Image (cartoon, rainbow, N blue to C red; front, side, top):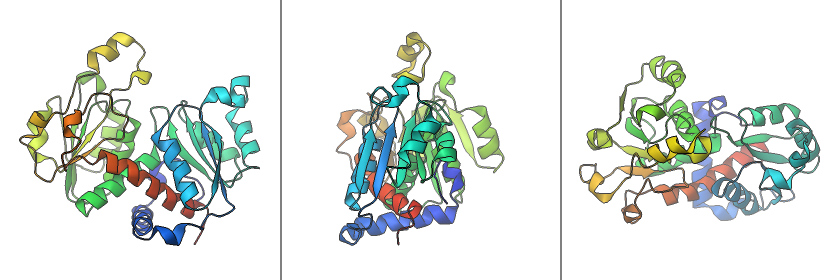
Length: 304
């Protein structure tokens, strides 16, 4: 495997190996401090990001490597009209590996065709976000001890939420996984994902607008924000943005060992009153992102 553009490129075995490696890094960080010495990661972020960019940078620094790059399109030659293909051709001469986020779907795939070093898709529009999915899988594995036999509720913006699309595609490959798809009518999961993944693989799912109705059955609740940047008009966004707000009252009929995940940033879809609940995993989840990205960098650079 040379690039990671889509989580589907990884076999279940490769995902499991990355999770094992990340767990080993968490247990023995000192053994990994020099693994990428003299290696450089370029972070090409054409769209704003806090966690993804900083966790990639922290991952490379903790492996003993170095980081270069930019954090917005305006501070790159894209502002002068340079193509993605030309940018990555040039950057390939400066770095050993590239992590790229872009608002246009498919841009990291184009980049991978022109780069001479491995490219990691760090999010492309409303499309894919494979390293967030790896983070989610590591979190579920650490919180639950397994990736099989789970009922997963995904709640909020299921239409534009790239993290949700990737998570469903990945978890659908593990045994006995069921989904509750919780969203307003306007933000339902795209029908192609239901058809190509859930129905084709005969995976059990329910579709509902009512979070409380499915709450007692959930092992995992994956909350997402309604993403203002994906809407064409402000009125629709304002009407839908507070569709689901998770509060302590809404958790009263939830399982005692429910795990609440969120890819962050949250706006107001999870009340801060839940942050100290042991079931709230989202800040741990953000921390795990660094370790799985360390494991991925090692794999793509073929560092033993």
